[in-house]
Image 1 (cartoon, helix red, strand yellow):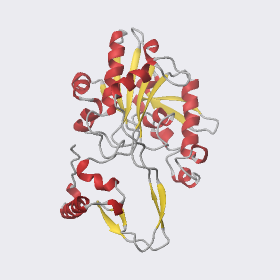
Image 2: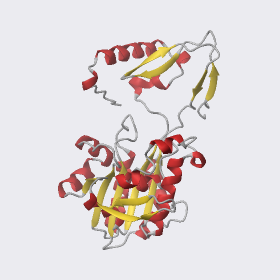
Image 3: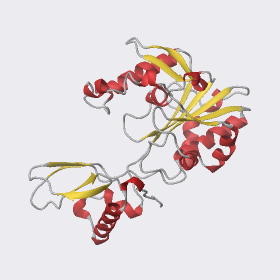
Length: 310
């Protein structure tokens, strides 16, 4: 059975109200009659065999890339980069898809005799990840193997010693990325697609770039001149990243991009009412809404901690 599609609802007298995020919590608000509310499609089912899907993707990449095994050779320098804590929110239920992919890549690298391997959290200008966040993203086994040896790094977009200047786009945009990544024989990038502007050249050209590069598209002008960040034909952010990606590719930097797409089954069971249409809430959903709302109101905002345990 396929999930129900999204739709636009015209508000009338019978409408119970719309749930809105409000500060550190949420609330129900009545909208004026005649207003329109957009509801997303219900979540697609998750993969029944994610490990099998990962192996198939590594063996049968789309586009012009060769299978990963043919790109791994003894004595090469390999860098595995991955999206940071900003994706997804809330945190993914363990095991994180990044950890499954990274382990699969490392197993293949070991079989090929690759010994020079470094992992980099692609932070761009985001905050640094905590130990628990890094552990969750890469898994305990990888963390305990790489971090103590200084082989699990967090990208620093403001460290001139750790950056390499690649070149300029036709529009004069400076392209500068992680020195370790730029000097590697292969970059394997483990991406998380949460919205349509994620992935593609945006991964390396943003996640592993410097402030010098980021300033060209992370600015007010880009926002003003983008009809939509999500529509590649009308997104200045997309256009700038693709120009930078072309410069990186022309410089001979090899990237094997692993794209993952998340469904919108975002919250665990205790918060599943957040994904339901308000008029379909049952008594249990309403009780959860009231209980969590009161709990959030009583929680000091400076110490807000919500545990999403499945």
